[in-house]
Image 1: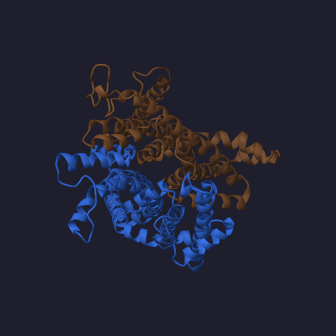
Image 2: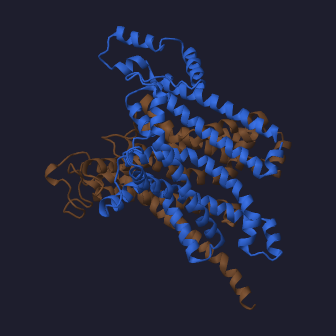
Image 3: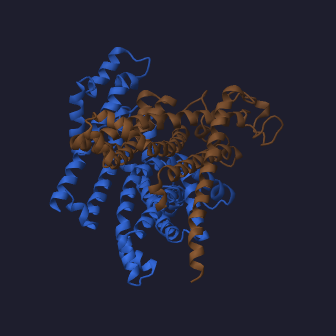
Length: 315
Length: 288
């Protein structure tokens, strides 16, 4: 087990390093003269040089890279060019929206997908099993923002039960904040649930065809008992992997859903800063998100090792 | 007891019929979608970008406007037709580039030894954990938005999945006896890959292309909805939804048509992909 953990940890660090270089080069390499872009067309050469000097943008790229990554490791994400606000402050103030949104969306997706996928795998001949498979097929084709628009049309405009958009902060009104998150979470959860249902269904189908399940059935267990006692632990592995990979998708969905419902979350901040060409803010925030996703995948990998001895003993 | 023998043979037949139905629906929708996109080059009921203020916000079925007009009086149906063109170009373009790079990388990983395999596979793992939507935003910020940027972003986002799938398909083909035979004949590796491996992973490649064509349309719609994808005078279904929400509020029926178009086309391509998988890859079909 220690070897397994060490190997996964080393890969995690390598991945973070590679991603940071890629992001840095992508933003700095393709972005041209950062200072000139920020100041706009009418800026004088002196002003551009002054800004470049102030933020160290005139130094060689690799020096800037090590500077950035060194500060990042110490928790300093840099400052905004325009407002001089530390990026850390910008990010932290947005997390109270984005984290609850993302986590509740994921939980709702799993709450839908695990029972629905399992049921439709065990009852693929019955009408309800086929209906679930059909709904999940359709749900995969629905863009998350359209789901958001339709939900807000129904529950916000027609029925007037929930706000169609906007944000009430937690400290102003707890229930107000919850109410503004309900529709975004349902949109995210439904669409995520639709695609997860497919994976759960095929993982369960796969497990039910294995010899050990047949053996368990031969001892007199019903299909449900065999699944719960023998199958579930085996089906959990591919499902955990897919959930880990879906985190990246979920964050993409969060970006869009925050726009649909005008929630001032993390991804809206990135979007605004992309438009304003705030390269440091974008670069650091994007890197934080990537580290977060990679960290989740590291946890999934380690869980894999705990759940299944075959994985940690291989090679 | 007497019922069992008759019930058993009936089952595969029904499954085959359902499989054919999936494939047929998929083909019909996909052909209609491509035909609509192609037709937009030759015929449009109206200029999709030309505002006609007196005709603004006409309901569907108004004379001359099949699906009505938007807040500026532009014809919805003409916009949908041009939007189909964008979806087709961006979705297919992104999937095609990913297919080419993914095939080269996947085959190389399968054929050129442990070092190549480790490098390519771990590289793909790293790329998979970078959220695609975020990458696309960064690209839009640095090289500007547009159809070409969107295609590039999709390729960066999809290539690792293609690489993984094609690598694992190629690895199982490499175990076959005819590969050993080809090696005994002292065929060069590139020859074995092109002559023996490629035709045997072609089915997987086609299925993967179809499914990611659909995923590309969804992602493009999302990016254009955010305003970092396609911009006018090009038209995208995602952009239309964004405009509908901004101009007249979401209660408008304008938000229906582009959304329905996306759902139908993506569903059609997914059904086509699933149907093709059943036909081309009997191993997988038996399981599902």
